Length: 147
Image (tube, rainbow, N blue to C red):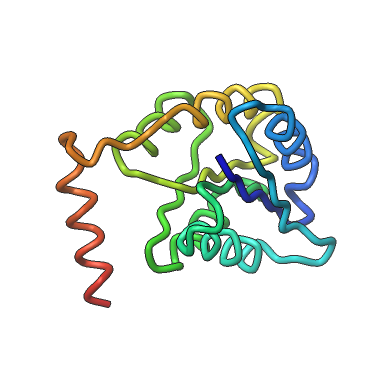
C-alpha cells in the first residue's frame, strides 16, 4: 500500500510517530511525507487528497490539532473521503462503511501509541461496495458529481 502522510506544525510530533510506524510496516510499500515547516493544514490536506484521487497513493494519513480541519479540507477535493477517527469503531466504520481513503487524527486528542494501533487496524480495512453501505456511498458520489 502506498501512503501519503502530512501535517502542519501543530501535528508534526504525532505525524512523525505514525510515519515511523508506516515505514517499518510490511504492508506499506511507500510513504510520502508532504509536510514542510510552513505548510498549512488546508494545503497539506488538498495535496494528500489530490494524490489519492489521482491514484498516486492508495491512502493518506493527515494530522493536525484535532483532525477536524484536515478532514474538512481534504474532503473538499472531489472524489476524496476523509474521516476524523480516534477510536477503533470509528476507524473501522470510516473505511468499511464509508470508503474513506484518508484518516485524520488530532495530535491534541490521541497519544502516539494509540494512534499507531488505529493505523495498524486501518491498514487492513477495506470497503465492500456490495455491502449495505455501498448504495449510500454511491448516492454521495452521484451528488458530488452534480456539483
